[in-house]
Length: 116
Length: 225
Image (tube, rainbow over all chains, first blue to last red; front, side):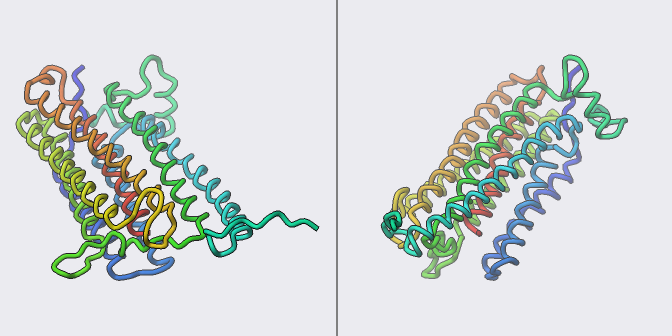
């Protein structure tokens, strides 16, 4: 059986292509307009995830694959969130230790252990 | 026909269970080369995520101030400092190349060999210009005294080390992709896939879209965050 592969109307690609431009312009605008704090992070993440989602779903044809393949690829990726969580958890601790020993100055020499 | 093989008459869960518990082939209707490319991309995702997570850890554990991206990556045009200009151009170039690649895949399944060749070549050239701009970006940063081990901005020295490593690793992927695209484009032109079918164009496309995908994350976390 010769595989017909993923054949879809060309219109879909142009639409996604256009959307990617819009989302990129959007995330660039977040910087130009000078959004700060939560609004900035939220918008950056939203535009990032939208772009990533459309690339994977349409350009990489994930949307039209069988669930067996989608699951095999996306489920392991989700586990990376655990890594992220663990490292963020540890990072707090490392930062606290740095502040404790180095104080505010990162180039400061560590204090000797306290002896009583 | 293609649609039919990818449709699942059962529900998503049932279809997954049936596929995974069946003999010989799990990924029904997927050429093995494509399944292997997906698995390679999954492993590459893990590598890039490790890099990005270590970047996150560095940002969270470093007491020294992190350089302001819009100032570091600004470009002076006609005496005016435009923040992130080069990066914006690079981003749009990579998206454009992703678009031409998607069209090349489409042309492949339509049997338009010439279309595939020229679109893949255009994709490769756009990728090459991306690498060129990255080389320009790097030399500009280095000339401004930002190195992988220290910088003259009184900012965290970790900035250079993680920035050059992650963008360098991505640049390496783009460079490899350019070579890969060029090779496949010429092989398509030579008629190597006339009998086998044009799955290879889609497989190459998967790799190229992945490179674009990684850039989406690098753009968000390194240049905007």
